[in-house]
Structure formats: structure tokens, C-alpha cells
Amino acid sequence: MNKLMNSFIALIVLTSFTFSQNFKVNVKGIQTFNFADDKGRNQTTFYSATPLEDINGTANGISGTVSFDPSNFAQTIKGKIVVAVNSLNTGINLRNHHLMTPNWLDEKKYPLITFEIKSVSDIKQLADNKLEFKVTGAFTLHGVTKEITADAEATYLNENEQTRKRAPGDLLGVRAKFTIKLSDYGVSNELIGSKVAENIEIGVNIVGSNKI
Image 1: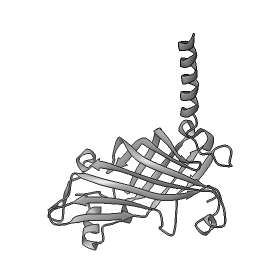
Image 2 (image 1 turned 30 degrees about the vertical axis):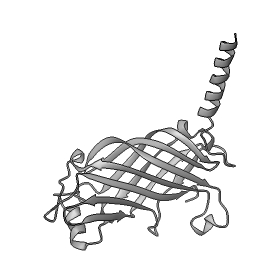
Image 3 (image 1 turned 90 degrees about the horizontal axis):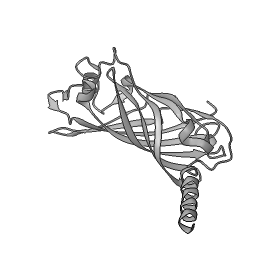
Image 4 (image 1 turned 90 degrees about the vertical axis):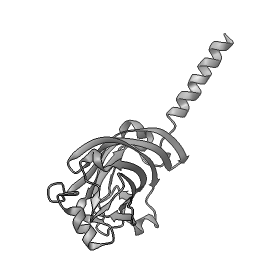
């Protein structure tokens, strides 16, 4: 009987822990956050190593939406983030131009890089308004789509005097990082005569509003 009771208590504790990994904020129902930012403050980064120099780049042509119920995060989250290929910047104009050509990303044929959310897992509560998790989704680059999993962190900020300096409404800040292989997406790793690393590290740092 004691063993049965202990198992029952453990199940209750485990269930409570599993379903407690949500935003504890003063809002109800599905919230949709728009990540378009005409001031270019939202940014993705990409990093690669070459024999001669490392390449650090950014992209700020970001749009897309993410929606979820803060009290039921894992079961309701969905969305898609879009990056305009022509907003990629490596810091060197000639290299940027080469990046857009058919030999590389072929911007004219494939103008967008996208990530569409499928699920989240391994959620950890860092604060009432902050969650850490893994997000799995469909990543599309150069016309090829692969499923990837990224490490992510999201912070929910209720609208206040400080947040309104960024945008109206509640804000959602998202950070994420993952690595892709160029060959998985049919992209050459030759860039202006230098070999670029097969693995490209990608970072995301974006903020969306539920009122724009």
C-alpha cells in the first residue's frame, strides 16, 4: 500500500512539474507576436571559419509571427520566421555580392530563408516570464527544407513604459542558436577563392509585439 501511495504521489509531482513549464504572466488566450521591424533591430547572425579569416555576418530583413497561449505554451505554439536573403551582410561588399549569386544562395531564385515551428521540448522555467527550451521545425534554405532543432530562450514582457520605447503591446524576446551544414542545402562552400567551413553557426536575437 505504501509503495502504491508513493508511486501515486510521484506521479502527481511529475505531472505538476511537466505542466508548470509555462509563462506565468497576466494575460489569457492565444497571443500572436509580429517580428517585422522596419528599424532593422531584429537580427540573425551567422559565423563560418575559412583558412584565411573568419566570416561573421548578420541579416536584419526579418519578418514572421509566432503565436501561443502563455498558460499552455508547448501545446499551442506555432509560427514561422522569415529572413530576406538580400539582407545578409558579411561586412565586405564583394563578398555580399558573391553570396547572392547562383553559385551560392541564388537570391533571385530563393529570396527567403524560413523556419517553421513544429514543436518545443525540454522546457525549463527560468523565471515567471522566461522559458528555456528546444524548438524543432522545418528550416528552408536555397530551396531545400530540413528538420532541425535549436536551443532557444523566450522572455515575455507585459506592456509598460519601458517596453513602449521599443514597440506598443506586450513583447516577446527570442534568442536561439543552431548549426547547419551547407552541403545539406546544396550550397557550395567556395567563397571568393576561399573554403568556407561546412558547418555554419546561426544565432537569432529578435523581439516581436502583439500589437503591430
